[in-house]
Amino acid sequence: MNLEIRVKVLEHGQGLALPEYMTEGASGVDLRAANTDPITIRPREISLIPTGISMAIPVGYEAQVRPRSGLAAKHGITVLNSPGTIDADYRGEIKVIVINLGDNDYIVQRGERIAQMVFCPVTRVSFRLAETLSETVRGGEGFGHTG
Image 1 (cartoon, rainbow, N blue to C red):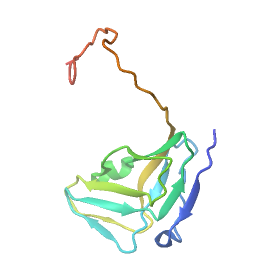
Image 2 (cartoon, rainbow, N blue to C red; image 1 turned 135 degrees about the horizontal axis):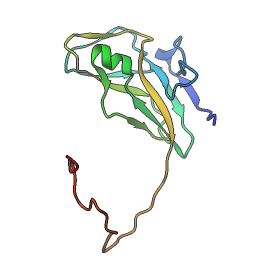
Image 3 (cartoon, rainbow, N blue to C red; image 1 turned 60 degrees about the vertical axis):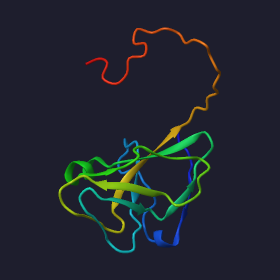
Image 4 (tube, one colour; image 1 turned 135 degrees about the vertical axis):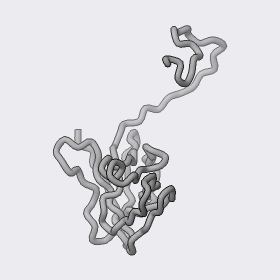
């Protein structure tokens, strides 16, 4: 399936590549940092990284912003609120909430691939009040119930 996403490049995103799949089998497109100056993220610090783009996601879909495994493994850079959801009716700039869980400062350079984005269908549900629910083996057992 090929879903067309309309992308608007903002002034500070001019000259950067649009989100793109880096390999034929990739699930996510890479998002690039659209900062004008390098951004230093100190250990345990959170930073909001601009991408310089906004988009029109079709109704019935969402975009999920996720960490890039290489940044996480090599530098401890990950995405908070992961996966971050971009709703179909949002038209503002896509920004990435990153945290440095590493021990060293990390400098985000303009154009750097900072996160990935995966598009997913969304199922809408309705809720109905119930006096009882069906029984299961698990029942109400919660976190860590299997050991």
